[in-house]
Image (cartoon, rainbow, N blue to C red; front, side):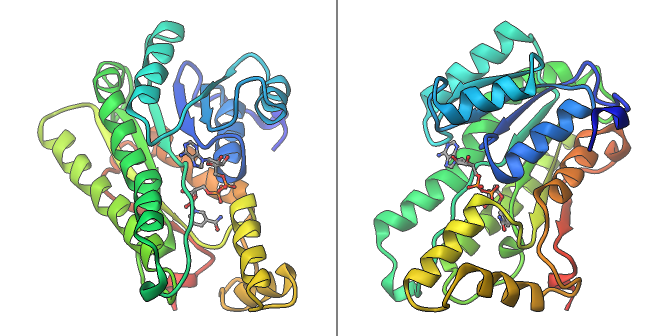
Length: 273
Ligand SMILES: NC(=O)c1ccc[n+]([C@@H]2O[C@H](COP(=O)([O-])OP(=O)(O)OC[C@H]3O[C@@H](n4cnc5c(N)ncnc54)[C@H](O)[C@@H]3O)[C@@H](O)[C@H]2O)c1
């Protein structure tokens, strides 16, 4: 989307996006900037790494960066101190950082199970907990309240072979989101919470996962797996990260002011079959 199409509907809003240097997170950051928001990006990379420095230079002054691991309580504290100091408010929190793990359940190592739960589930809990006070303050300015957007997956809706740990983590994100949505609404706290459930999206995470399958001999090359996934998807193709960012924009905007505790599925019809 070119800057010429900007309608500025997030002007004056402040967003925090985890895992924002790549894939769905980066596409979401770009969309929020186009719509006029200020965005604080967090990711694992050091602030002076080529990845972080390059993104910040390209995105301009409305974007800023903090190196923070979503599994670390101390990093969340630093992040919220920075957001308070720099902006004094937070209207949009996108808990997007995540990772995958595949393999037959009987072959999963407990350490790997715990690691994926730490990133995909603890990370969403810690981010939510850390930012609720500031979002409750900021949410009074916004129709429908501040917006928490948790990135789950179609794998948080249905089971898939050799995906039990990822399924469990994304299912937890789905129901955690509903629980906090009800909690905030019934307490009249001005914060909404919804989950997004992408299908197969062309990101570095997907490419790395497909490469591992190729390495294990399940396919000759990653493109074969992309073609297979496309063939099992009713629309016949995988998603571009910007198509998930569209949902993240909708859930951040006032157009979704009456939506809380719901799940937005962006999967080309995959779970409709
Ligand atoms: N790509 C897909 O097909 C797909 C489908 C459904 C859901 N998702 C979910 O979407 C989210 C984004 O996925 P993506 O495909 O864009 O992945 P990606 O790997 O391309 O980007 C994820 C980013 O998160 C960061 N990250 C990882 N662990 C982190 C941690 N502990 N702390 C902070 N940052 C961390 C990574 O460095 C990376 O920049 C994930 O939660 C993923 O599970 C992806």
